[in-house]
Length: 354
Ligand SMILES: *Cc1c(COP(=O)(O)O)cnc(C)c1O
Image (tube, rainbow, N blue to C red; front, side):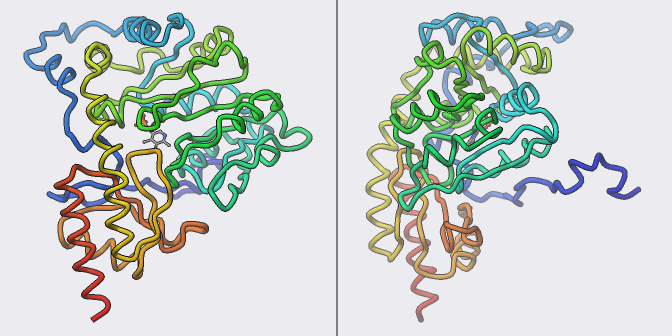
């Protein structure tokens, strides 16, 4: 048994980030620091279900709730097991193995290249400018790449900034292939392009309950697009992929959006404070519209992340990657969590310079 048994196109893949967590405080995954979603918790408390029935094939209940929220139709939506499944579905639908280019900005979300390999697409990267903004011409590409699949998160991960709407719209109108806009953090930016799915017929907006909705445990993600594209996506998506408990919890969460509002306001208040404090410690913080901050460390990134871990706090390390050299990406916490983090940082930096 060796890896030569594997399909050639996936042989190079390795397992994903899977840290030994223990009791550490997780400021490394950008989930909601206010904890569980109360409406989802209330829904599962004392829940009685018939374990012997399949959920609805395409999660119609949740699709109806989403249609209500955004003023679209049920059939504009595709729902599944996290936006990761949604991205995989979109690639399986539109990437011709060995032929189609998948173009993503750099630096951006590392899982895009994983899904590109799964679908045997040809990965291409379009360099972001100095301010981590898009170069529309580079994204759109030339020749056959004009029909490729584009994917980008806005706000971008790990840089934190939103891309300019005018750049995204230029890309949508000039690019001839599918454009996936991954809005995993869009609640924090109070900005979405989901209302544009009928204006741009190549637009797929991908969203998740994992971040601002505080429901990563349930694995719920969805896409919105015009009716024709959504029908193509639903024909490819794994049937029943979203389990019934997760679907019910997501519907419950959509009925009580006050928790999300409270979470977003908290981040808006704490983000500048955290950045300011980190800057006094010598970090260089990049502007963020999300619930995390990309920051260049004043000491060696690995020593910082290791020191934080020893003090029981995990933050994400991007220090060995091009463009984010020596950078870390902490999630924005509550006032208390941020103090814990910056006290630990201060301590480690002082220790290093002794
Ligand atoms: C966290 C994250 C997601 C969410 O993925 P899920 O599968 O819905 O949990 C998607 N895209 C980006 C850029 C993310 O950071």
